[in-house]
Length: 314
Image 1 (cartoon, rainbow, N blue to C red):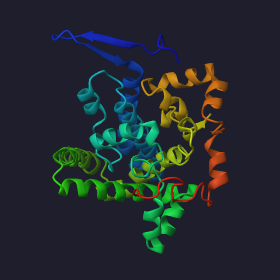
Image 2: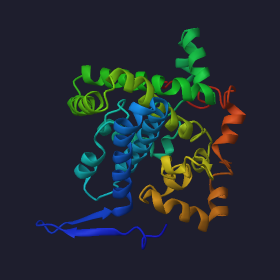
Image 3: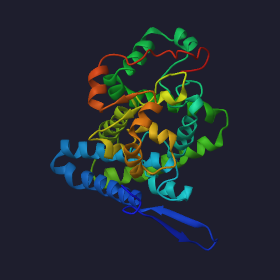
Image 4: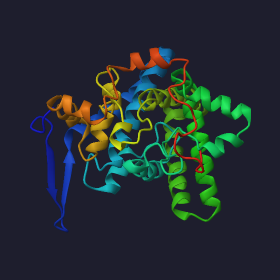
């Protein structure tokens, strides 16, 4: 999609700064919140299963919009982006913490390093050797496609909360503030879900919110692999019916090379230089997520211990 169709609008404010707004992303935000609300208010009471699945799809879409906000979309104002995506439809993660850890993840030299990359699914050899057998079996299951979809959201949340909890106990006030804001936002979400949707928050968390996070796990399952060449660590999934939910982040290598680009420009960028992108990431390419699921449904894509890192954490 071209920027002629989805323009970036600029506004001059009193301090003479330019506020830019990507209208395509703003409209997608409106669609996401409206769809989420309609699913919970109108669809759930009459068709609980269909309504729950629709809620999960919009929760996953909202997660993708939060990802856009970490990279400065849809506006040039960081605080405004936080407000726009701040309602935690997916419940599990504070946006401020997600933004901080995700930007750390974008340090290419750290990709997959379990001690430096917050989104790594590897474990250090030393840590792995000291884990009890039951934990090893869980982490091994988490490296299969089925395990990542079923267990990944819970494992990721437990690890995230554990790491942040330790930092808060050490006196990190910024992380504490992020969680305070998150809990206050969940209070707003609770009011909508319980009073308007008529759905207990606990049920919202374990069904649509969990499934929404599982959909994101479909995308993130194969996103990165270890390779000596940093450019060969990031995947390209060429097409998927879920690409609109992922906001084309299935073209993950393109996103990592050009994180400044909004989601609607990624497909054209890829199409114009398809062979170069594929060559650039060492042909770490899948045609779709069906092939990934078929190949790794109950088989580990990789071993859990990192091939190079011996003394860092899981």
